[in-house]
Length: 390
Image (cartoon, rainbow, N blue to C red; front, side, top):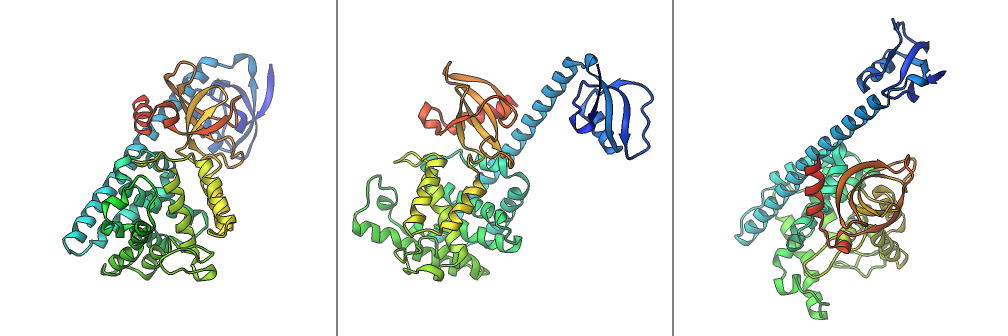
């Protein structure tokens, strides 16, 4: 059967009889199949708008081979980007370890290394945020402080980009976010890592970490006022019940309010040696409750949730098909149906061939947001599997 179709509806394997509408002067010398995506892209590039196709000659094998090749290429691309993202996170931990050592030895902190790291982080946010958000979810329970600082810096940069803040300011804010908890090096370990609730006296000591951070950041040659100010505000609350200054309302800068949201969100979702993290959806609910209680800026909380997406990239979900999947990309026009990569059958309780799925175009959906620990899995194991599949 011969039918006329828009070039945007054509897929690999289609048999084109002739061109029926175009803006250019390209001539199709004979009827032929669209053998690969390169051919299709060229037709679009030449200004082809509509074509006459023979539906009875559609080559399903050609289409399937092209889809498999495209899927493999996307998996390889994701694997490469994941490797780069993990290397960036590893570098950040080494920089922090050196900073802590320099503080203990009374040495000057190297601001250049921090600037280089955050600049690379921001470039990655602007070009490859999906893989970075997946990689940052691979957390070591015993390295919470090191990983938390990087994650908060990443979240702050991501949030700033979403709000349209200029890149120069983002760089200074990312530095402040990266250094916001540096004062915890002066908090006694038995308080910093205590699994149970802190006593009133212990909490007073814990709160001093912000004062220590301010003192340390002030001593760094070349540090900007923006970086210093935002780091010092991350535990202030709009109702005036925060610390260390007890600031309220408009006395807390917009950037300080943003960093507080990023800090709390990562603290809620991260696994630690003494507690498991919460799902992203549960964490969003807590952020909203804190805002309604007068602690956080409600408008910024709503903006942050929109920035992250209903199902944030890097989060785990259970599909209606009873499989586990990791969210790998947004669908801006259909946010509750993101792009995912399924990898685990809950029927078989075992890993299966990974399958990248756009939930907006298939008959499947998300049943609920979950944690790897719910199924005796860990994110490092999951990511190793997904990368090895590529």
